Image 1 (cartoon, one colour):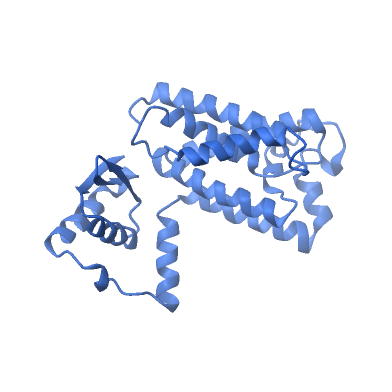
Image 2 (cartoon, rainbow, N blue to C red):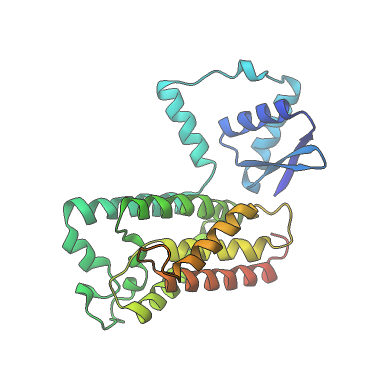
Length: 271
């Protein structure tokens, strides 16, 4: 990340952040010793960010001058905000999971399951001649809550990783953690499972290891989120939740993601 601006004026910082986001520039704000700091998340926006910042300094708008957007303008503003939080791979997987959910529940349930389960028709044997099946279970979801939970964390964690390390890195982490978590779940419980949560925990593990000890890392996560995700993982191995969870996929995803994060940290110490 690159620091763009620092101020003790919270109103000024809030206005500048809104202006940056309206231009589709991915930024985040941190606080240090009473000073607010604006950080650019993705280096590819550096030139645009500098131009917007200089214009902001030359002609600083007041918060009241920022119009309330309605109708099409509000939709465009929302899209710009979402686009600034993620990249193309994040978006494609997000849409693909939604399409699969629609097919799975409303169009062709049996055909969708047959095509995407780790083994066709739910038979116990793996089919090495169909290698895509080691990945495709991540697209299946068995309840609306399951879907929303996973897509939220996919966008939050996957978007951050893609903006920081690029689309290729997100795709690599996604494929590796999907294969490892799906295989672990199959080995433990058989073929009748699905969900993006193994990959989500892989992204979570990557972020933990890569951001460890780096106060201003783009992948640094709030302590409350760390407690929640690890607590949820631990609860899954108890009978307290009273729901079926892919615990082995979660754990395998977390460990494989952490290993990739560690490798990237060693090979790219400045990221």
